[in-house]
Image 1: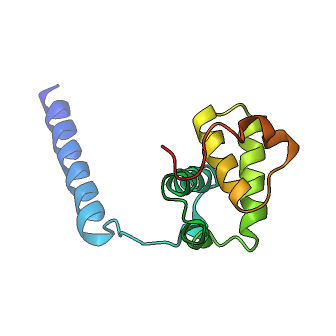
Image 2: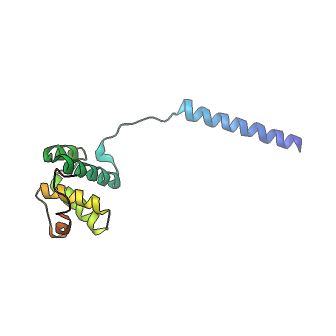
Length: 126
């Protein structure tokens, strides 16, 4: 029995040692700065909401469009409209929807589904 426990302990320590060597020396994790266009849709949407909130705060439409170009979308106004309508259809947070609607309105893409949210915030107002 003692021989079995000793063998088990030695094999566990050898396994841990090999695992640490492989993980830290042979194949360590590498940080890769990938482009924003490779983000998952969820994170692109969250980034778009943050840009829309910034637009609502400072009213800089050109800056908002430049920030959204990082996502690799060809037609920024249509992209913002799509995100906004998806947020409304999925009953997401009303503040996020209001930010997106303000940005969509600034881009000239206010649709009937967005109308109820259009007057919640005016650009440049907190």
